[in-house]
Length: 556
Image (tube, rainbow, N blue to C red; front, side):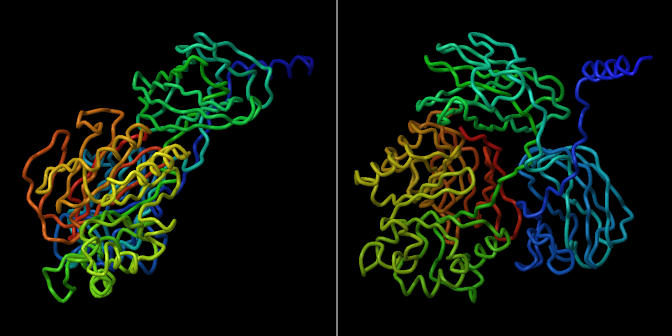
């Protein structure tokens, strides 16, 4: 056969076969991720110590002499799993299981043994999950369970690219393929007609069911936003596509969506009369929690007591924060009781929660206004520029793909703060928005609903904020998404009431609409897991146990 003909046949075969499926590389997924446990022997042996990369010094240990016990890590999103490596301390598990879950509630066993002998167990597993845990049912010693490190490996990892789906190969309606602007990939890009309703629709194949990142590469040469309604198997998320500066300048917008195993439909529909942006391609990859971080949150914290009293709770909730090793700490007011004087901050709060002062982002409550030296005097003296970074008792900041707004609800009747809030939200460029202050608009507790917060809720709702955290009532409560009129709304705001940081508990008195979970008399800290486009949380009690686990929400 002539050599030229042979080469032509080889090239033709390659084109017909298409690109070979790539095998995803195995990555360590668990290091530094949020961790919880059924119990801890003491505050120095918390769950996070088993995911810090130290194989010989730091460790997690459960209480002694009790079965079952478990250690759990949150990977941030459902991920294909390949291997779990356990490095045991002397107190090992004789019988245990490796389990995975997509929601932290229903568990699938990936590995099981009744003959563990300690040392290092390097286990090959097959399955997927967001949450992975070691579930011990029989101890190998008279002590508890103790792990220097638990390492979870899986396919891909943060930043691992997935398959590309070119826009010009998709199904188009009121849109056409063009090639008149540089920088596109493939053979062209899709230009929407200047009407609402045009769409680009792809059929996407996923090897496993679960959360995936969907990245749309686009260009928008105008200064006006060109939003798209992105529907994944009929579930729609509205996303903004702001100007990129020129039609030849391309940018990415990423959302996280749940895909079915096998074929899925992804449709991007223009929602304004100017049509959509120019679309180059869709990239699909595993949502492995890249860019996720942990924040600890509570309100109503330091009573006038110290660790010398067994009934004093703020030293115990401070130990919970320490075990989380959060990126930073949010407080939702009433940080110090009863009158929040500087000497009380120094004598009580500073001895416990003061350990995290440098990374605390506080707001004041009503008790901070009772200071005989003047409203907020002790609060301002203690926290200084941490609480007044711009010379005001309210401020905002960014972390990851999140914009945080810290507000002073003692002054919600003043137009200056409301006007500042609206301007701040208008200037925000982050996908996810969280706001926090003291007085809740919605509460099932003794104080009940506080309408002073309604204008703030309205401003946040208008800008599609995602999460609100409050205190004031001394209990824990979470609400489903709702609008400022207490109507259930998938585009509404999720509220957490976290007033169980240490002050004496209040009763639940009048259950409000959309309230999904309420706990009174449970002291603890909210552990927020905040991703690039999703969020969830757990309430961790002072005994180290998980008292509540939220659903996983996608940012608007």
